[in-house]
Image (cartoon, rainbow over all chains, first blue to last red; front, side, top):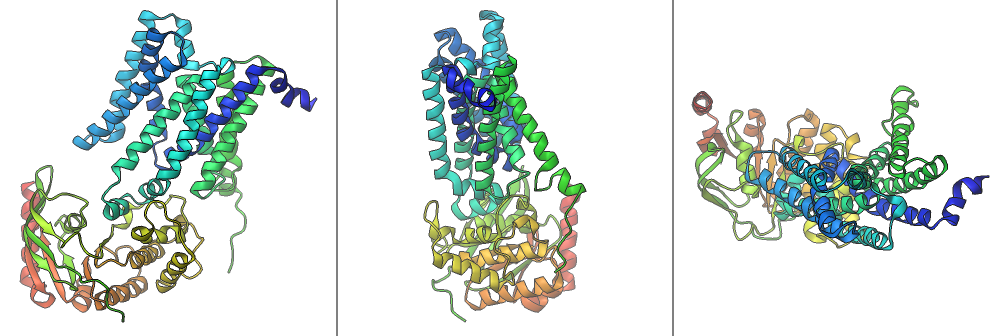
Length: 289
Length: 245
């Protein structure tokens, strides 16, 4: 019974195995990236960037058809253009980065919807918005796995300055004279991981597997490394459980995965060991000496 | 007391103006901080005290004029920002936060050796935070956090130390303890510049004072600077700027 519910679908069907591996790769890259987005108070910027990717993916689709590479390159170019323009504008003018990003991503999103509705059918739009994790191809798997690998190596390289810049930005600038460079490298990693995610989950859902586990982890872990590890684990668990829910109840896979992550998030808010509702309203006795 | 190992250069300021959106925060300041001097920067709110420290630390560029900290500041510059600029909810342990002071030795990639950790522990002990190593920064009181940041300054081992309101929001005992550290750095021959509000403390502990009201009102020996006349003039100039702006 347990075997039939939890294991058999992955043994029986190749598409389920591929989907699971895609989730693993997304979790490995997205977990740490999401953690840093939460720590740097940029949770909603991930959402904005995921929308910014849309017109690039749409143009890639129009030029190359339903090709992983065309859509990925398009999405990457559009995402990077929006992120770098926003960073540049916020440094050259008085506009804060979140405001300039909001401006550019809205332009980008409208452009994307326009392109898709003029040239494509609604089916195509749904594909870009919601992804197709159950029909992940070899190419897509290689792409997603490569992005996860590059992300982990890049994060290892910029880990220390990124932590310092999040905790005490003035210290990093005063000590090394830098700061902005690490921020830009990080933004590029965010875009790259969103591009990986939209192959499988679509632009709307990709950011969910990045942010929900990271936000949930905040209620359990108290150090940057353990937050990264836990949010990766929660993201993979969401992928695993979400795929099973989708398989057993014939529900769309992307939303099933994100809703599973959402349930873990809500559960963490209530039950977590750190600053959760439980610790707030049913505190354990404090120390007396 | 061990003297600081490297020769500390003077900090020379020539006709310095730093402006935000063309409104000057520091206006035509010239003068120099002698090597090994201990200077308090005082003045009304909005007088450009923090701006001056940031400019010396290289955090904001001068609009006009120049600052010479001497050949890239041999021995480096250590800068303590106001407490408000630190993200206290960030999940980092006290020992890790303090170890950031070793940045010039460990940089991006080198690992912390046992010797480094030992020095970080010793610095924590010196500021009275024995046994706080594994506590989260967020669980510290304002005074304890300021002590930890002073431990980080100790590890930075810099020839020039800039302190922005180091004793704001900490109690009398903490500020007395931290003042002892400042006096020790001064004794070791480091140049120390601190933004302060407590004129009693300035009179008691700081030989040099710069009284700032965007433009310099007076700069020199503390007792010749902190006269009723000068203090009145600083308030007057500062009010004039606020009315004009």
